[in-house]
Length: 60
Image (cartoon, rainbow, N blue to C red; front, side, top):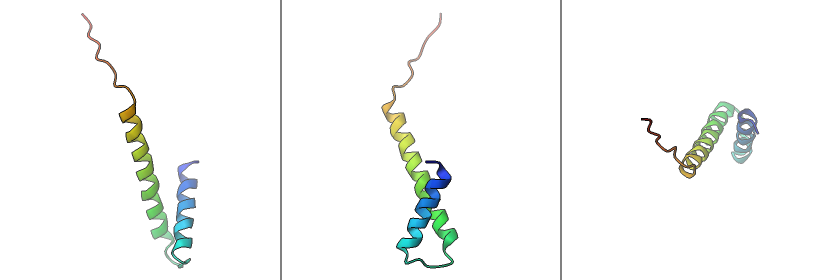
């Protein structure tokens, strides 16, 4: 899923969970962006921790 689609989906969920309060679309969108960015950041950090670190190669 692309970021835009994921953000839109979460923003819609936030809207529905809030009781469909009108006029909070920007707030819902920005909160959804924060959620998505945090997920991707966490995913990248886990991948970095699990991937082997490159070995230092010395040349003579």
